[in-house]
Length: 616
Image (cartoon, rainbow, N blue to C red; front, side, top):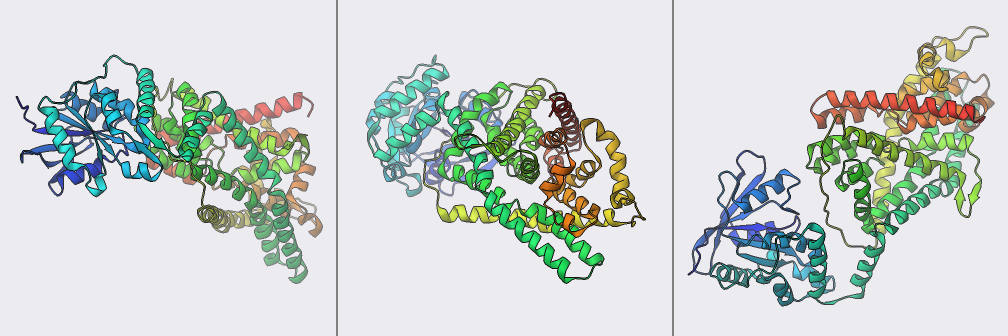
């Protein structure tokens, strides 16, 4: 006896092509609403069965498992099981599989088939799979799954008639009995999915086999992390080794311009503003543009090649240990550029506690604004010598600072997930993009955009703050024999703050640099350069490189303490504003500020006193 079909549900992983298939099957006969009690979109429409009758077709949210890890997945689970308020249980299911990523999609497929409902699989996007050199045997897959499998190309309306016919037969009792057990765990389903996907391959190109071989190495739980750490190590070595000649050229250009201004203009306040404020301050930051460009070159290269998503999978295990998932990796990685887009990228994290924790630790990732600070201190105090074949000491120290930020963030996440943001970590499944050669044009555009953002900050925020700081340092004028910085408004502020930071090894000039750094972290460099320029009593000393001035006035424990402060330094004002917007209040941004100030102070103090005890 034919089983009547009144309701059919489309199920599958995200990005399987469900929406395209839904549109092809329903045409304009669609309506969109929300499920009762949740803000999850409900799309339904009318599809025509082979008998000419109409059935309601529901496009369920993409899901990776019936063990729901998000509101979307919870709705999918409840609808399929008949537990969703205001929604009857479907009479049949259309399971949508991406032919190009079959193994991953077959994991969820086994859960669906094991439920015992009439199911038909739409092997979708077979045209793209063939384009990429993969030809699949739908019949072999049908035998393995125990359900009808129909090849479809939803965007071209191919296979729709065959799909509807198979659906009617499934409800009519003519379908193959499901061969999937409902007592398999996730690990067993993955093994089974791998075997079924492999058996369904009729042919594939050598390139696809090469890509699978790369994944076996790069995603290996032992070799993968080692390769990732080695790659990061090479990147930070290159930041110093490759950038040095370009940075020296920029520094020379800035000093040449400063000398020309001194030789051309009469000695007055305008010349001082140009040499001590603009060139000494802003110029000291601009010279680090090569390091910024080289760092982003590698980041863009990893993104364009497809490696970045694989790095997220590698980090998932470590993040699960601290209560997060691999979903947090991409926002945290974005924070290496700037914490602002990193915090905004947390919107992709469905679990609210995971998202909040990621927002709170995002500022601990070493953003590009810290790089000028690190670079100038390392250049001043760490010798440019080799400590092994191809390993420079300066690059090694920079690598250690980045690792310190990552480790610190993970420890804070561990504490937060067991206290203020207590909760279990959610699972993580992500579509892996294809490996591909990055396009030089895309890399060039990306690097230009990053360089322009950096230069724009130098020409706006850093310039404005530096000019204000120069004015505060220049007035009132010092009397005979009096130090100009001590006599100035900024000097009075710095001397008051120095009392607080003196126990962690900071002097007056270091204390003064902390205040404008709240506008942008790299302003700390321009602040130091401007302070020393104003304090100089002769033109030759004013033109002296900032690294040389620091090496002459600071001790090594002081420099290490300053570096430790900026590993955990409280974020800029723009980041605080974005955190406030993303958390809908001041509670968590205030908490973020408090714990980062405390962590920066304690780490700087511990570094200073340990260095002193070690006799450095």
